[in-house]
Image (cartoon, rainbow, N blue to C red; front, side, top):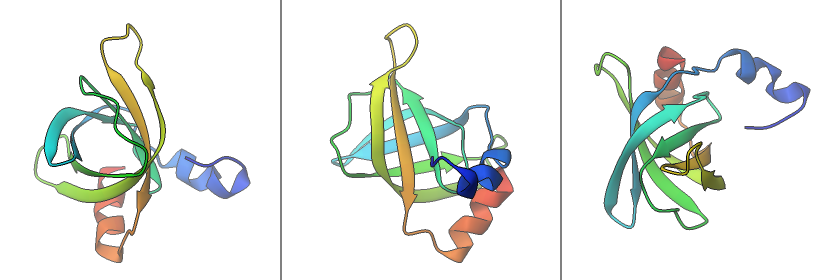
Amino acid sequence: MGSGSSSDGSRRNRFLAGLPAVLVERGVEYHGLAHNLSREGALIRGAFPWPAEGAVEVRIRSAGGDLQVHLWGRVVRVGEAAGGEQTEVALEFLRLDDRTRDELDSMV
């Protein structure tokens, strides 16, 4: 979720539609949708409380449900989604290994 020319490639490789996602904070699972998914991060929307600053766990499934990626993300922004009924959490992914990068590439 960077800016500038270094992220131009990742902006082209973004999956805009929502994919099923689970945000895990303090052991509690909150279901939502992942938007703007890229190798660098995602925007998660759902009916869940605002997460604390820091890292959260997230699991994102492919549209067909045949692939699930388990990630850790740093919370970079939190706000209300349009209408105020949902929360938006912008995440920057942390500690990506080659396998996880390949799985994300399959999704985007």
